Length: 254
Ligand SMILES: [Zn+2]
Image (tube, rainbow, N blue to C red; front, side, top):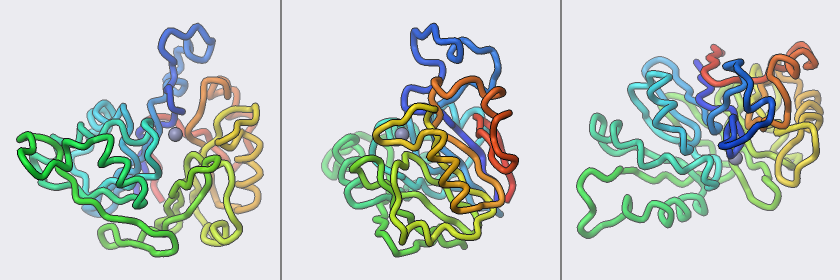
C-alpha cells in the first residue's frame, strides 16, 4: 500500500495569508503545507482521506487519476471544503462514494446542498454516494477492510482509520482506552501534532510523542502541523528515531 501525503498543514495552511512569520517565509519546500489530506492506494484501488480546500491542487500535483472513494474524518472546512472539485472524477467515473459518520454526512448535505438536490439538480454538479460509517463496524474499501477509530477533537467526535498495519489519525486531542486497543502492532501511525504549546482540541508535539511512545508503531509520521511548530528541518532533528514529520508530497510504502 502506498500513502501519499497530499497535505500536512493545519486549517490555515502554511504559509498563512499575509503572514511575516519566519516559517511562513521559509524557502524550504518542506515548510509549505497544504490542508491535511492523504491518498492511499494499492493494486488498482485508490482512496483519499478528507477533501479540504486544497483538493484540486493536490490532485494535480500528485497526478491522482482515479478515486474509488473519499473517507471523511469530520466535517470541519479544512477537511471538506474541496468537495465540489471531485467533478473531473465524476465525469470520468460517475458517482464517487463518500464514507463518513452520520453527523458528518448530514453536515456535508447542508454545506453542499446542491449536490443532494433531487429536483432540477444543476447538470454537472458533483455526484456522490453516501456511506455511513459506524464506530466498531469495519467497512470494506476495495479488497481491504477499514477499521474506524473514534478520537475526540475537543468535544467533537472524529474518525481515524486503520487499514491493515497502517493507521491515520488527525485532529485528535483525546482517545479512549477501547479505541487505543484497536491501534496495537502498527507498522505506520500517522497522527496530528500542531505545535509545542498546548491546544484545546489538538495534540501538541509532546502529547503526540507520548501517544506514539504508548502505541509503539514501527514508524510514526506527524501531520496537521502549524507554522508555530517551527522549521521542518530543525524540528525533525529533535525527533526520536522512529518519528518523522510528514511533509507535502511525501510518499511512503507499507
Ligand atoms: Zn483539521
